[in-house]
Image (cartoon, protein in one colour):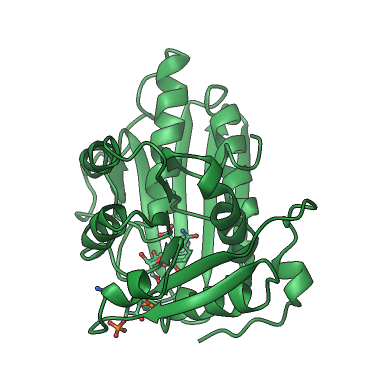
Length: 270
Ligand SMILES: NC(=O)C1=CN([C@@H]2O[C@H](COP(=O)(O)OP(=O)(O)OC[C@H]3O[C@@H](n4cnc5c(N)ncnc54)[C@H](OP(=O)(O)O)[C@@H]3O)[C@@H](O)[C@H]2O)C=CC1
Ligand SMILES: O=C(O)C1=N[C@H](C(=O)O)C[C@H](O)C1
């Protein structure tokens, strides 16, 4: 497990200047790689109070009994929907970093929220500011390059592939290409003369390749090509502390953002 060497002030670089009441926070997946870092960041924030830590096998009602106003979920794709349902039923705002959401799941959550107009759920495949910016830059550049491929690189214990960030990046690029009238990337994942899988996964016409390697944390490259030139956008999270300013921003903002928010772009004013 990577440990953070950053100071609380560095982890909390998006802290608002205004005085706000203390927010009670519960963490789901609290002893996992991300949960451990969230617990550390919440404990270091003067305006946040850690009231509950829940892991697999623990009693989920602990977060409600402890008076959590916001729950942060870094668990697993196969359990996160149940956790969100529980939080909505208990009137607890939910900041979700766990991956694995498709349009159908997002629509279900929006439905659950309908009868609760004051409640918020923020779901972000990546809370790293650099990763969010990479996605924005990739969207901007997409219409200028006929070829595009994504390579995501992660630690070997990651349960899902490709990463939630890569899936979202591919979909954003595909949407930008469609808006500009570009077709799918040429020969995107054509398997002719290839071993199956050698050209990666096809996400809306964008090939996505997943690398799992000891020593890595979370990294992504978007490669774009046109006649005689390439553009490579790369982001590296070397430490899970890199996700904490985005997580804490969402925890502080969620009370002012009812409904479902996907990604933290709007919270960052992008
Ligand atoms: N959005 C973002 O910025 C980021 C998102 N992620 C995503 O976050 C998720 C977690 O990643 P990571 O921390 O590396 O994974 P870990 O496996 O290290 O942690 C997951 C934790 O969740 C616990 N857990 C499992 N089931 C439940 C449950 N039903 N209720 C409560 N806790 C449960 C696990 O407990 P046990 O071990 O006992 O099963 C474990 O402690 C992944 O989907 C990953 O892709 C990761 C990094 C950044
Ligand atoms: O599991 C991880 O580690 C990460 N998961 C997220 C994803 O799947 O995109 C975010 C980041 O890449 C780290």
